[in-house]
Length: 515
Ligand SMILES: Cc1cc2nc3c(=O)[nH]c(=O)nc-3n(C[C@H](O)[C@H](O)[C@H](O)COP(=O)(O)O)c2cc1C
Image (cartoon, rainbow, N blue to C red; front, side, top):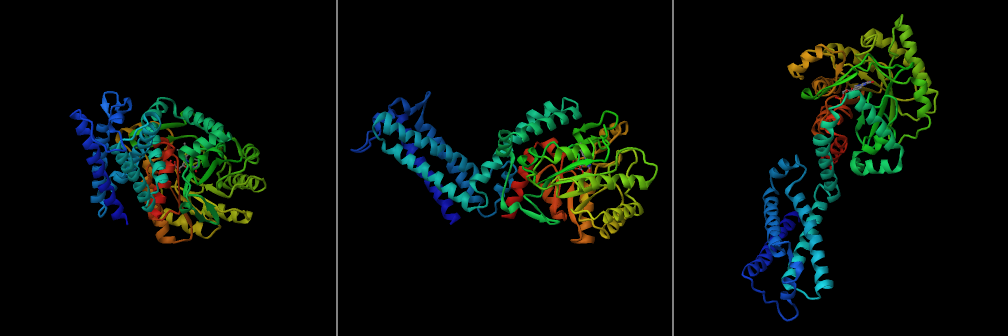
């Protein structure tokens, strides 16, 4: 059927070429084509509507059909191998998709020309009617074709929109944002997101631009139904301001925090920086947040639209003993457990590298203590462990063995990288980083995150829900983490560098791959 429709497209475009070519030739010769008794081609073709500026509409029609013919030929040659489509998909438009866009234009223009003949001129031109019928048929056939094939027209329009939004973000907005201090931009984005997310109009607009919904994207992990696999990673919405905006942007889940029992104003500035050449952010916030009580007060009023979780860590301050530090964490969990906040899961952040006490629970014995204490709390919701990524394989394996003995539903690989020798960064950025405080996100975390996703899947099978976090900048990056074993993925830095449409792009690609 697809072959038949494709051949029909070629044939129709040939008819269009012959028809518009004939009246173009007559126009060139300044001859009025003979039309038959019921038609008056002369009145139509000499009317003011037969030219757009100095250009006869017949010439435009001829060029239009030539383009349609070339695209439909490319499409036919591509039916078998899909080589062109695969290449062009990177630009979000295959020959058939471009053809469809073009035929929308042809369809609308034909309706316009028919209306002009019917209502303004009152006469009919036979060749113009043939052209109108041809271009309407071309539109109908490409629409049917797209509907029958993998991508529906709506799907295609959506992906084109995402692509355009990406261009606007990368070439217009990002260069402006990157002129300003990273933390101020982050704060302003949070305020803008909160404002838009709190208004119906704002949410509708965000949704129209960004959100991709499809039953194919649904997934259930740890007993939670996720509308899609793409989550906002901990640290972006550290005080829980974005519960309205995050679903509207198209995320399927949302981690708030990291929240600590006591509030923390943040490490000494600068707390946030950028390494554009290394596609990384420098993070030195030190778990800045308003503290559990204040955040609970705010979140109790909120109805979450997507699965939302709370990332918890110990307060960023000095503790006299590990026991005190654990009590701080347990008390934070208790506050959330006893609240009416509608969160569905927790992240236990054992791996924030830029805190006063370092990463105290990333040794097996201390992790054992912490998880034993958490087991005793009988927490009602699944806990995902946010893992470090700079440990070696054996250290990571040992932590996973400890986690597997406790009520840990999932592991997240992983947190920021503190490895200042990281060769994923440019040497200039590495040199610069050595003079600064903080740890990096983005591409420098990609390799280690992937390595430990694969290790967990290979050695622990389905014991844990695996969350892949670190360096997702494209739909292919997300797909790679999923291929390696991730059940869910999260991101921040990719969104900052590529734009918020990235989430929709990933979801579109996921839809496309699962169709
Ligand atoms: C600005 C910023 C703040 C972050 N704060 C936290 C945090 O509070 N808790 C946490 O578990 N991870 C935090 N992270 C780490 C991210 O959650 C994520 O694990 C890491 O950035 C890798 O993902 P990405 O490359 O997609 O950004 C932060 C990352 C960034 C960029």
